[in-house]
Amino acid sequence: VVVYRASSNLAEHRMGDSYFYLKKQGLFCAIGIGLMILARYIPCSLYAKLSYPLLLISGGLLVLLLVPGFGRRVGGACRWLSMGGISFQPSELAKFSLAVYVAYSMAKKGAKMASFSRGMLPHLMVACAFVFLILLQPDLGTAVIIGAWLMILLFLGGVRIFQLASLSLLFLPLLAWLILKADYRLNRWMAFLDPWEDPQGIGFHIIHSFLAFGSGGIFGVGLGNSKQKLFYLPEPHTDFALSIVGEELGLLGVGVIIVLFGMLIMRGIKVALSARDLYSSYLALGLTCLIGLQVIINMGVVVGLLPTKGLPLPLISYGGSSLVVTLISIGVLLNISSRR
Image 1 (cartoon, rainbow, N blue to C red):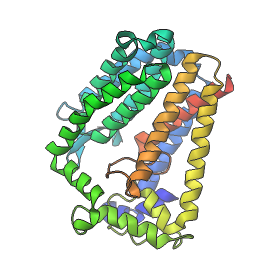
Image 2: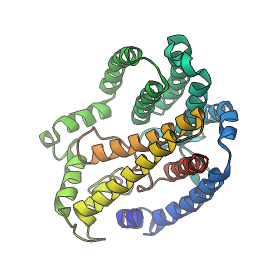
Image 3: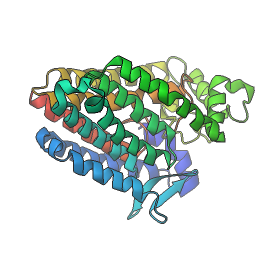
Image 4: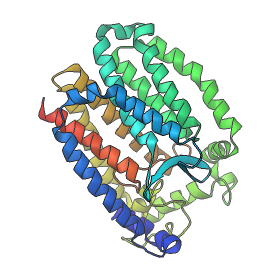
């Protein structure tokens, strides 16, 4: 419903078919649910055995994006592989592969995680290789998510806080340099600090997100009555889907979505804490953390608490790769839950 209401006008304008994005999302939903059911019955031990092949496949697909003729460039970034009319974002698979690998590696190392050379360094090297390939697309937001997610997982795995804090301080200048070297990233940062300084320029998008939430009020203006989806908000069916929900369904509609995500994340944590082995526990925590981080960042962006970043809201926004990988992750969580 959210995807159709947010995308119908845009799809009619671009494709001549108001159901275009709805039909594509429905196809990916069917594929994702099928894979979720399959993942529900695949033993977790198989993922552990496939951790290194998954890393190689994900890394290979990220490299393939850099080969002319394979990647599809949209808005100056080459993040999608197109095959048979279907586009796939390799970075989504890369995040899942990293979750499988880090869970397997941390469980195998056990108490040795406290050692820098055995605990932090191997995981950091693998993650940095993926982050480097993702930055070449370029996609700084996904790289930051992977970095933040890895810090959380390493902390849960037993890496010392001093090591994590030192690493964070080391990478902050690099992050600042990446923002300053690209004008569009700097503009997003300036719009985050003061969007009203340039309301018709760099602050236009986030201001219209504010207008969407403000217009919606408590109860919303009603399904289909959004004004901001009429070519004011960029990609209202992806990055700013929650803004359209806020306008059409109001605070109550947004509140329901927040509660549902809260339930999903709490259940994921509960599954991890009650898992029957350390690997399953780390895997459940890793997948839950990935979903939770994306939810928090997307919601933070649309209400102006974080700089604008092209990141879909899991299970809500349009985006086939995100939907399929998220549903597979939920299938893995269901499998771990059934073996508590």
